[in-house]
Image (cartoon, rainbow, N blue to C red):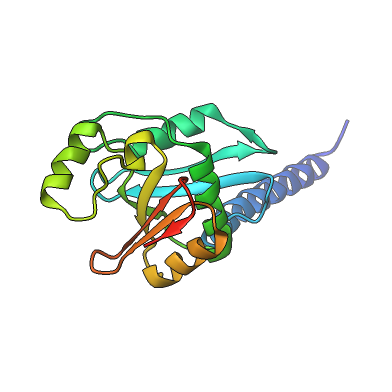
Amino acid sequence: MEDFTSVTNHRRNFLKWGASAILTTVFTHPVLAAVGPTNHDHHILSFYNIHTGETLKTCYRSRGKLIHRAVDRISHIMRDHRTGEVKPVDPNLLDLLHRIVLEEKPRSPLSIISGYRSPSTNEALRKVTAGVAAKSLHMEGRAIDIRIPGYETAALRQIAVNLRCGGVGYYPESNFVHLDTGPVKVW
Protein backbone atom coordinates (compact mmCIF):
# COMPACT_ATOMS: atom_id res chain seq x y z
CA MET A 1 0.00 0.00 0.00
CA GLU A 2 1.35 3.42 -0.93
CA ASP A 3 1.89 5.95 1.77
CA PHE A 4 0.07 9.31 1.86
CA THR A 5 3.12 11.27 0.56
CA SER A 6 3.43 9.07 -2.53
CA VAL A 7 -0.26 9.42 -3.41
CA THR A 8 -0.08 13.20 -2.88
CA ASN A 9 2.99 13.45 -5.16
CA HIS A 10 1.25 11.45 -7.90
CA ARG A 11 -1.81 13.68 -7.64
CA ARG A 12 0.33 16.84 -7.77
CA ASN A 13 2.22 15.61 -10.83
CA PHE A 14 -1.06 14.69 -12.53
CA LEU A 15 -2.50 18.14 -11.81
CA LYS A 16 0.70 19.90 -12.97
CA TRP A 17 0.73 17.99 -16.27
CA GLY A 18 -2.99 18.53 -16.78
CA ALA A 19 -2.75 22.28 -16.07
CA SER A 20 0.26 22.53 -18.36
CA ALA A 21 -1.60 20.82 -21.20
CA ILE A 22 -4.64 23.06 -20.76
CA LEU A 23 -2.58 26.25 -20.63
CA THR A 24 -0.56 25.22 -23.67
CA THR A 25 -3.75 24.60 -25.65
CA VAL A 26 -5.45 27.80 -24.52
CA PHE A 27 -2.52 30.12 -25.08
CA THR A 28 -1.11 28.73 -28.33
CA HIS A 29 -4.39 28.31 -30.21
CA PRO A 30 -5.06 32.06 -30.76
CA VAL A 31 -1.47 32.57 -31.87
CA LEU A 32 -1.72 29.81 -34.45
CA ALA A 33 -5.09 31.11 -35.62
CA ALA A 34 -3.65 34.59 -36.08
CA VAL A 35 -0.80 33.30 -38.22
CA GLY A 36 -3.17 31.34 -40.42
CA PRO A 37 -3.17 27.76 -41.61
CA THR A 38 0.23 26.15 -41.73
CA ASN A 39 -0.84 22.60 -42.54
CA HIS A 40 -1.52 22.21 -46.26
CA ASP A 41 -3.41 18.96 -45.56
CA HIS A 42 -6.20 20.92 -43.89
CA HIS A 43 -7.79 23.78 -45.81
CA ILE A 44 -9.23 26.21 -43.29
CA LEU A 45 -11.15 29.37 -44.10
CA SER A 46 -12.60 32.07 -41.84
CA PHE A 47 -15.46 34.32 -42.91
CA TYR A 48 -17.36 37.32 -41.64
CA ASN A 49 -20.57 38.30 -43.42
CA ILE A 50 -20.82 42.10 -43.21
CA HIS A 51 -24.59 42.03 -43.79
CA THR A 52 -25.63 39.40 -41.25
CA GLY A 53 -22.81 39.69 -38.70
CA GLU A 54 -22.23 35.94 -38.86
CA THR A 55 -18.78 34.43 -38.58
CA LEU A 56 -17.51 31.01 -39.55
CA LYS A 57 -14.17 29.27 -39.30
CA THR A 58 -14.10 25.79 -40.78
CA CYS A 59 -11.91 23.17 -42.41
CA TYR A 60 -13.59 22.46 -45.75
CA ARG A 61 -10.99 20.06 -47.17
CA SER A 62 -8.82 17.53 -45.34
CA ARG A 63 -6.09 15.51 -47.02
CA GLY A 64 -7.57 16.37 -50.40
CA LYS A 65 -11.13 15.30 -49.55
CA LEU A 66 -13.96 17.80 -49.51
CA ILE A 67 -15.89 18.01 -46.23
CA HIS A 68 -19.47 18.46 -47.41
CA ARG A 69 -20.89 19.62 -44.06
CA ALA A 70 -18.29 22.41 -43.98
CA VAL A 71 -19.08 23.40 -47.59
CA ASP A 72 -22.77 23.52 -46.60
CA ARG A 73 -21.91 25.88 -43.73
CA ILE A 74 -19.87 28.09 -46.06
CA SER A 75 -22.73 28.09 -48.58
CA HIS A 76 -25.04 29.23 -45.80
CA ILE A 77 -22.85 32.16 -44.70
CA MET A 78 -22.43 33.14 -48.38
CA ARG A 79 -26.22 33.02 -49.00
CA ASP A 80 -28.19 35.86 -50.56
CA HIS A 81 -28.76 37.96 -47.44
CA ARG A 82 -31.69 39.75 -49.11
CA THR A 83 -33.76 36.61 -49.84
CA GLY A 84 -32.17 33.98 -47.59
CA GLU A 85 -31.65 31.68 -50.59
CA VAL A 86 -28.66 29.34 -50.42
CA LYS A 87 -26.77 27.95 -53.41
CA PRO A 88 -23.92 25.44 -53.08
CA VAL A 89 -20.59 27.23 -53.37
CA ASP A 90 -18.11 26.03 -56.00
CA PRO A 91 -15.29 24.13 -54.21
CA ASN A 92 -12.86 25.65 -56.74
CA LEU A 93 -13.78 29.09 -55.38
CA LEU A 94 -12.96 27.87 -51.88
CA ASP A 95 -9.62 26.54 -53.12
CA LEU A 96 -8.89 29.93 -54.68
CA LEU A 97 -9.71 31.67 -51.38
CA HIS A 98 -7.51 29.18 -49.54
CA ARG A 99 -4.58 29.94 -51.85
CA ILE A 100 -5.04 33.64 -51.14
CA VAL A 101 -5.16 32.96 -47.39
CA LEU A 102 -1.92 30.97 -47.63
CA GLU A 103 -0.33 33.89 -49.47
CA GLU A 104 -1.68 36.74 -47.28
CA LYS A 105 -1.83 34.96 -43.89
CA PRO A 106 -4.63 37.27 -42.69
CA ARG A 107 -5.22 37.84 -39.01
CA SER A 108 -8.90 38.57 -39.66
CA PRO A 109 -11.64 36.58 -41.38
CA LEU A 110 -12.44 37.26 -45.02
CA SER A 111 -15.23 39.85 -45.10
CA ILE A 112 -18.02 38.73 -47.43
CA ILE A 113 -19.43 41.71 -49.32
CA SER A 114 -21.42 39.54 -51.72
CA GLY A 115 -21.55 35.78 -52.14
CA TYR A 116 -24.44 34.00 -53.79
CA ARG A 117 -27.05 36.24 -55.42
CA SER A 118 -30.46 34.99 -56.43
CA PRO A 119 -31.55 35.95 -59.95
CA SER A 120 -34.05 38.46 -58.48
CA THR A 121 -31.37 40.11 -56.33
CA ASN A 122 -28.95 40.22 -59.24
CA GLU A 123 -31.57 41.87 -61.47
CA ALA A 124 -32.46 44.42 -58.77
CA LEU A 125 -28.77 45.30 -58.34
CA ARG A 126 -28.33 45.67 -62.11
CA LYS A 127 -30.97 48.39 -62.09
CA VAL A 128 -29.16 50.51 -59.49
CA THR A 129 -25.47 49.56 -59.79
CA ALA A 130 -23.20 49.74 -62.81
CA GLY A 131 -21.02 46.70 -63.45
CA VAL A 132 -23.43 43.97 -62.31
CA ALA A 133 -23.41 41.32 -65.04
CA ALA A 134 -26.69 39.90 -66.34
CA LYS A 135 -25.24 36.38 -66.17
CA SER A 136 -23.19 36.96 -63.03
CA LEU A 137 -21.30 33.99 -61.63
CA HIS A 138 -22.61 35.09 -58.22
CA MET A 139 -25.89 33.43 -59.29
CA GLU A 140 -24.07 30.11 -59.72
CA GLY A 141 -22.19 30.13 -56.41
CA ARG A 142 -18.96 30.68 -58.36
CA ALA A 143 -18.15 34.25 -57.28
CA ILE A 144 -17.49 36.26 -54.14
CA ASP A 145 -16.71 39.89 -53.37
CA ILE A 146 -14.36 40.21 -50.40
CA ARG A 147 -12.02 42.39 -48.43
CA ILE A 148 -9.64 41.51 -45.62
CA PRO A 149 -9.53 44.01 -42.75
CA GLY A 150 -6.04 45.42 -42.37
CA TYR A 151 -4.98 44.55 -45.93
CA GLU A 152 -4.99 46.78 -48.97
CA THR A 153 -7.48 45.61 -51.58
CA ALA A 154 -4.93 46.54 -54.28
CA ALA A 155 -2.50 43.98 -52.81
CA LEU A 156 -5.27 41.40 -52.53
CA ARG A 157 -6.17 42.03 -56.16
CA GLN A 158 -2.56 41.54 -57.26
CA ILE A 159 -2.26 38.21 -55.45
CA ALA A 160 -5.48 37.01 -57.13
CA VAL A 161 -4.28 38.21 -60.55
CA ASN A 162 -0.96 36.38 -60.09
CA LEU A 163 -2.78 33.12 -59.26
CA ARG A 164 -4.56 33.19 -62.66
CA CYS A 165 -7.46 31.06 -61.38
CA GLY A 166 -10.45 32.99 -62.74
CA GLY A 167 -11.93 36.44 -62.94
CA VAL A 168 -10.61 39.25 -60.75
CA GLY A 169 -12.42 42.56 -60.45
CA TYR A 170 -11.08 45.48 -58.46
CA TYR A 171 -13.42 48.06 -56.94
CA PRO A 172 -11.27 50.54 -55.01
CA GLU A 173 -14.15 53.01 -54.46
CA SER A 174 -16.12 50.30 -52.65
CA ASN A 175 -13.00 48.69 -51.16
CA PHE A 176 -13.47 45.11 -52.33
CA VAL A 177 -12.15 42.55 -54.79
CA HIS A 178 -14.36 40.29 -56.89
CA LEU A 179 -13.14 36.71 -57.40
CA ASP A 180 -14.75 34.04 -59.55
CA THR A 181 -14.01 30.65 -61.10
CA GLY A 182 -14.86 31.70 -64.64
CA PRO A 183 -12.35 32.34 -67.41
CA VAL A 184 -9.16 34.19 -66.43
CA LYS A 185 -9.81 37.91 -66.89
CA VAL A 186 -9.10 41.12 -65.02
CA TRP A 187 -11.08 44.34 -64.74
